[in-house]
Length: 277
Image 1 (cartoon, one colour):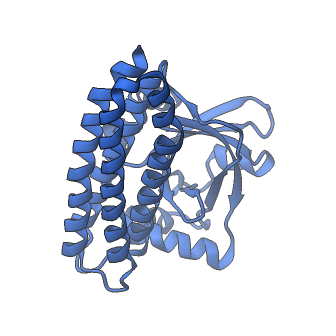
Image 2 (cartoon, one colour):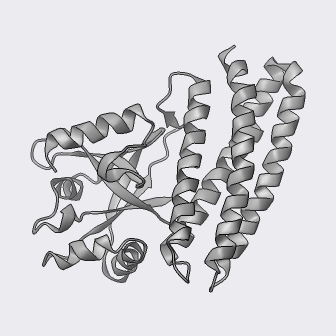
């Protein structure tokens, strides 16, 4: 894609916490920064991604079916340490090119979820690479927010966005639930569990120390975390069934969505003013 088009997407992505319109509207998108194989300069490119197991995400070097691999792929072959901007979070990651059966299985999942990947492969003689990005742990999360309250709002918007994508994917799934959709659901569940665990063990105790008057609010939020944990378990149980019924899955996703929206709205109303103070 032309550099000026890329730059527009990059600017919108950063300004809106990872949500963009145009050709990427409704897509899972990240910004991938690689180091030039020859120049050594940093290059940032918007790319679609797929959630994966083991805390990885996958990106596909399709170049829309062009005869040559995209420049960012050549860069990470030489310099596999990359920077990932995933909405709110920015982190360093190690890039690994998948090979053999692992690559084929991952690409098949991608095609199952979006036939456009197969169209790209059909347009070119090259085998389109699939690359796994795994975060390199480096201390507290790097969140693109100017205040704790803004960080909470952006994280919440990320969960809202992901749930909306999953609801749409379930509605379009047909008579069976595909493998990639299962992974999408499980990754979202794990992310939500991790977020609530962090709030219960770090943020809520800190707020309780500084704002004892907020004890009823924090107690309610912790109770809601427990109820949402049950809904997450219900969703995971449905996902684990080999022949999951998409109608049943959609019901569970919507139950979680409704409960989570009420919870997130209440938390924003109550905690953002405390954090600002």
